[in-house]
Image (tube, rainbow, N blue to C red):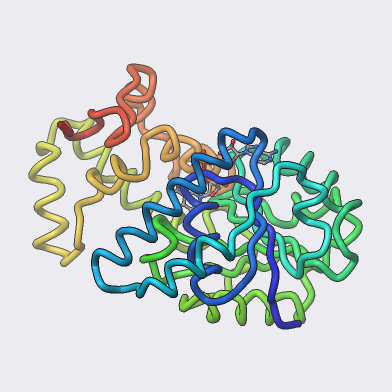
Length: 283
Ligand SMILES: NC(=O)c1ccc[n+]([C@@H]2O[C@H](COP(=O)([O-])OP(=O)(O)OC[C@H]3O[C@@H](n4cnc5c(N)ncnc54)[C@H](O)[C@@H]3O)[C@@H](O)[C@H]2O)c1
């Protein structure tokens, strides 16, 4: 099936970026959130992405207008999903919330509509169990920010049909992304590898072996990473890093135990760039 219309549920950081990217490539988007205010904030974020695109010469005025006009704010979720080819779920990283949403939209969406979750680490197969269409449930894990990051992990649940996988791959390519396929498993590819990397970097700091600055410099200059693992954790958000670390710990045992220092930072409200302090300070 060619994807022409989608609904994006959740107008936060990822939902707005995915809606922008889809509209940029001519897909009609219904953008939904739980409150009108959140949808309006999301639309404002999209308008500012469009303005940046124009200012940087990446978008012309016609393209800019088409993006804004191609995204329709829709508060009623059943209305938002009613006649779309694919739904991108980008709400909070919480299994119960995602299952509740999937149950609700399963009854409202067309029987051939694909459900694509943007979860970073939760089980796609588990999420699919609350629907009557597990073969049409797939993970499309975009990275932050979705308009610049090239990768989409296509997460294959235990009941995901081949046709659904192929459609999800074609959809991500249409959005100018590079898809990789991975079977449903905690952290998929990127977050599992990054979880190990960030975990070890935090443990080196926790053991007092090197400073945060030196750990990041070492990985940038010694491993050619564009940013160090501690700066990356600050960018992702240390609360999100804890959620991912807990999922990996549950899935793979002690070698993925959540570092004590990471938990202490989150308890103190040091959440990384968004709170002004994490492993580094931000002014
Ligand atoms: N932020 C990242 O770096 C990143 C990267 C990749 C994947 N993800 C994943 O993408 C998803 C969204 O993350 P985010 O960072 O955009 O979150 P966010 O907190 O910025 O936005 C989530 C939005 O969903 C809305 N929402 C919550 N419940 C809803 C519901 N039932 N119906 C409609 N809207 C609802 C919230 O009001 C909020 O606006 C999560 O699963 C997250 O793990 C995040």
